[in-house]
Length: 315
Length: 302
Image (tube, rainbow over all chains, first blue to last red; front, side):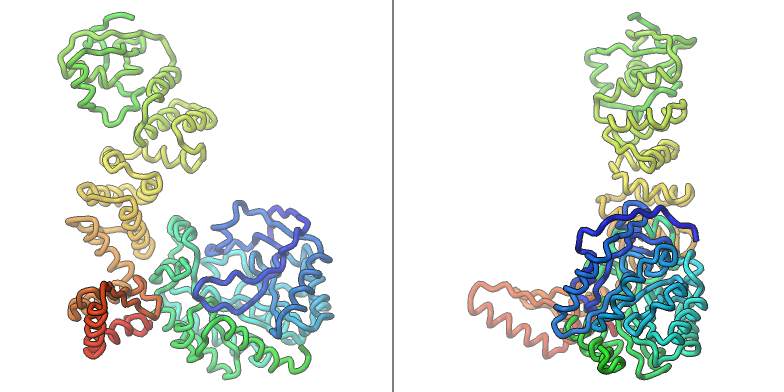
């Protein structure tokens, strides 16, 4: 893959932070480790396009300082099992083979045994990390129908490679995560998602899928103009409204209809799958999954329970 | 400075003119009252070519003046254009005039740096995107320039209009011309038209019918781009009309039907008002209106 210019900066602290969440929506309590800012994958809907001034990749150095931040956060987790990821402002794996950014984190989480690190990616290449994997690292892939990948995620790995890589991670003893995010409404999307979920059920071992997130396309207002300007037909087919957080989202009726359909399809694979909605309202949760959540604390509790169930006393 | 007969000047040669619109009633009145105060600048050619003061010359012709005071200069086209632009920089140029100046600088081969320099003095951001937007205005047809001038459109809305192809833009400009438009209404209308174009591939006359006012046009487009939201709004309107809210009571529903609650607002001056309002609300509850409104906010109705 051709790489954009990368620049290294020493950490000034604040690399580990809570996922900002969004007003009046339920957040999973994820925490991010912002090792890299900027992404080489160039997905057309990426909100980084609206925020970052240039396409340079900024890599933060300072392992000791980052580990000190992590220790501080994990030791003060207040009874919850903290989950961290490096895929908020970038893709966790896209440039990792070249820069070996995650290795120290894998080793740290493997020794700490009190929290989970999730490497979230659309780039199906983690072979260089194989010998460093441990049960506290979750390899995750964002997945979308191949038709959508061809149109909007042009520099990423194809779907079959992502699913194959996820299978490989399971065979190496890892739990994997899946993120159906962004889910996008376009002509024929329902059929494409049925096939996608069929593939998930056929290729992966559901007992080794730690979680699956569902997130319908949403973006800040600045992005809407860009999408119109760039004529992104796939991204603009559905009916958008402004949510309570000011972001553009599909109208609630549609969100509920689609979440309900996907949730049922996934549960048909295995009733035990842990499926959650990313940044959604409590009423959308209730209408589409039947799960009653009052606030983010409720969802964080579900995660704690899930992790305790599958890790037993190891966490 | 010398007196030049109007017949020796080519008034059709607008190559250095950046004035828009070309006709100026105030100037005509002023010259009719006291004559031309500031001499015009002419290029020393046969016939003479106006460099600065074409509008004054056109007024003179309308007023049937035979001669005008002029300064004759022997300049290259490029120098003549810069004189024309600098002659106008001290006044507030409208957006079309800025575009014409930029378009002509580009046509006469001025470098990007030279154009950016003038743009800064016109109060414009010296960026490539701004430059290309202004070049597009300069190259557009008169109907488009008229709309930009008459409605004093923002660059954002102009840029949005320019992104339609010529045929579609002409259709849109024709429909917008007679409407009273605020910047935000126009922005919304143009966004919806872009959305329709992206979804359907092109804009047809049926997409943008002749409308009495901007609100009617906006509602027509909204029905096409946001059918579910429009349907919910129409259902809400029907309920509101049927329920006849008691005086002092109002019900506010989230405009996008996102919030699953509604606000019931009471305007109260005394205890009697409270009692009346509560009785009114109780009546609405019993008739099932409140339930019907709440149903629209649950995401179950389309």
